[in-house]
Image (cartoon, rainbow, N blue to C red; front, side):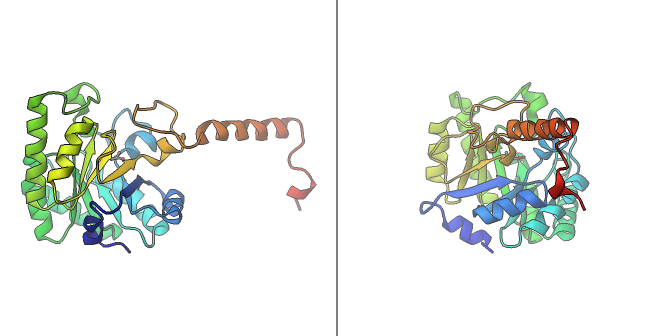
Length: 262
Ligand code: KIV
């Protein structure tokens, strides 16, 4: 299994690939395909559970998904999102919840959204031996404050704040930072001055790695498609087509044909 410091060492040498899984089968596909990191993202709230954002996701939801993912991912490090309000309230809450996630699932580490304001939590988790991945730029858990999902780094103030947040996260000890919807030239600047890798989503080609929601890249999630998603398949529509064919064959009494019963 790839170790955390081996992931850091990929910076500047080869791109880091991270994709999401919420259950056993997808985890198996990702491992077989050869991703570097599997992320049990709190995007599960939208993609798996059908909520309008990630805010309703609980620690127990994340543990349920991660246990299933761990059964499919034997060799790949699994990182788990700390859901909304599981770490923001206090350092103690962060330790308790991250500890529960690692203890009950065997995952390799956790990911938390934020900047300067979560550094105390990052340091406390590292002291207890829990590796942390940062996530800044556009933070989906802040969607109610933003009133949507804005691009970050569009002006000098946003650029400066983002740089300050990334420096603070690196200093606090995160092993990598997800940069979400950051203007490409700002993501480039951050990637160049950080010693740890950046993993971009909608933040351009200069990041040290890329992450997407697997259901997005497969074209399985049909509710909407962010600009930064490239669909490499049309699994959603192909599935609907296959299910329609099944319905049709049963109605026309073509299924089950003689090879399909005893
Ligand atoms: O929840 C998630 O899936 C994520 C990735 C999109 C980075 O945080």
